[in-house]
Image (cartoon, rainbow over all chains, first blue to last red; front, side):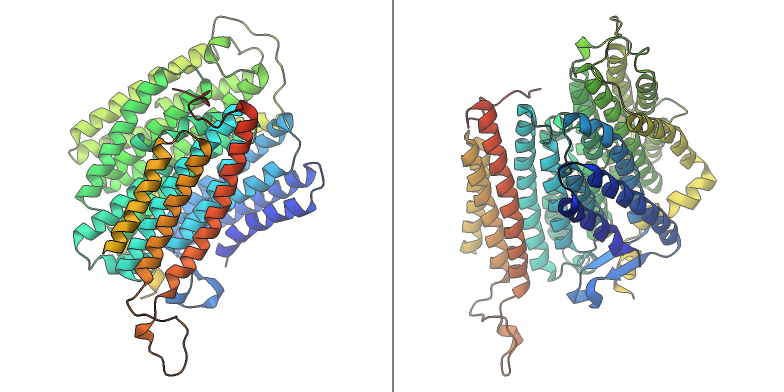
Length: 491
Length: 112
């Protein structure tokens, strides 16, 4: 049984780091890297295993109404692999980057708590347990955003914590209402009972959760905290938050609740399409006007989440494939771009695009990988972003959502526009820069190169044979509500 | 029904405070009010008119007991809220050290 270890190991590592470390960060680095390598192996093995047979684990051996269930189907495995790949590379990057800020083990302990929270949210099959793990993850995220000890980081962290608390309160009220309707907290049982309830009850409950988790996913009217938090955090944390946290806590939970528990219907579809359209267009326009490098990337995250949301709104099999594929791709290229921005910030001491110049000579690896990341996010072949956006647009046209397809095309063009600005001023400016404040470490460069390679390698998922092998079980897990109930309740 | 309504009004008071107040400490207090309202909601859902304590003894009916599960949930959520509130207060203290004010209109380095 590998499921509980995915939660126990990072939690144990967090507390061991706290206990064993003296003043320095040596034990923190050793423990967190070892844990993360083990977790990545476990999650890959788990993903391969659950492609055939999904696993269910009942905590402490009790049976369903009394226990907390951990469920691992192929969708869970898919998310876990994404989370741990990005986490390992971000951690590798952190070692050099964080030492230039401070030499403390606290960072690694908090990082492990963040992983615990995300793993828990992804694995759990119990609504209240999901809430608890979400809070563990968010708590670590608030602390990590403020880690750099500068005034604006505290400001961003406070804003993030207030918005996070409001959404958590709404989610708690939602959980209360679900419990009063269904008398159970197990997601599969809730799904079974809600199917017998009138549709307006389901829609109202769905509305509360859409607001709550929409805030976590930073869809457009709920996005206000994201540009501050993601641009102020240390670079590896930005890439964790933008790459996986908003997806694990926001998009993943929305997909699980709407598709597997509440049942997808026309109203949810329209809400997703509305939120997605607004996110794509408005966030892209805001991104164009930014001069802070990481802020531009943060707005870009809002707009890319919009692509995932419209694909979910379309709701056909192909669109779900597009959504999941784009989710994977966005985690990779946005993780890469935030790491690039962090390297530039560390080497030049500024995030202002106007103060940068030609970096090709002094930072060749950063310039090269950022070019790859830019091409991927703007949707140019043969990088992964091109294929996921193409699939979303084709799915929209196939399903008859022509205006949505138009929005996606316009969104892609706007993405290209603001990333042209990012490249032109950030890496290919007029002023030639020859002296750097710091040199990027080996770990930092390796992490960036790995992510850049992944940008190209994940394109392979569009090949039909690979897609059938890897993605089809994941899409089936998302779309097949009855199978999820059957799996957990064992009938 | 009136209880639920009052509880909902308490939630809205908290939300109003978070949105309109300018003082960091008042924002934290408003959040606390909101969270209390949410907890009260959960306890109210579990309550049954004339219900007794939920401990199984001989000669007592299960049907007359209040539901203990939401009470357990509320205990957990109170612990979580304690942590988050402590975090927010710590952030407010650090913000005061950096900016010398609790007024959020003066703490504005991030904009756009």
